[in-house]
Image (cartoon, rainbow, N blue to C red; front, side, top):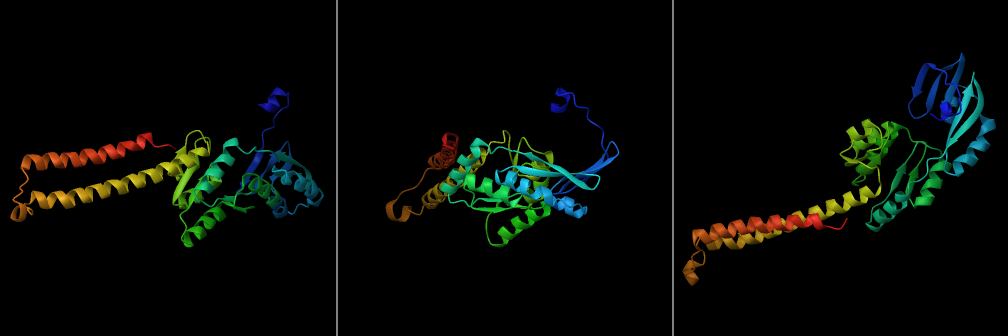
Length: 265
């Protein structure tokens, strides 16, 4: 739409090919065009040394750089800035406060990855990662005995989302990511991960409380109902009272569970 507003005619590409994790190639108005990472141009045998310095400066500022080649020669670059969401820093800070280690996996360059990681305070950053490598890194963390939650929004994130113990997709992302994940954040707000984590902890705490209440209640009530105290104290429990007590046990568990609705997330 931006090109149309400026009156720029968009040519229809031919022989289009997408190279996973690297870029795209095709023909435009009879010219062979390639757009993507330095790795893509290297695989095509195209020398792009002249653009390296400028690409490095752009990457250091947190931008994603795509190199452009036309007819087998480097022609220029496009730097795309994907601003860090304002909620990202807050989400990382809250997760850190809960003792969670944050690892970033990105296909971007080292400079871009380190710029974003430094800005957000991310513990560990892996750059130049291909889609299958993301899933491999998740497997490695799992092999170390870690519980892994993976958040992503792109098609390339789908294998890692499926591999993780908990996959979290952004509702604003690709359908493949949402299908592979167990949780979808409708608004794509990273603070939703913090709320989901807090809710899960509150739920597990509530479950343990309910199990404790039920165990204690039955450990005391069942022997009394069976007449265990009759030989010593002459106490018998009326069936009506026993039935009412059993109902009260269920009500107390339900009431305790309903407290989750007032949990601060």
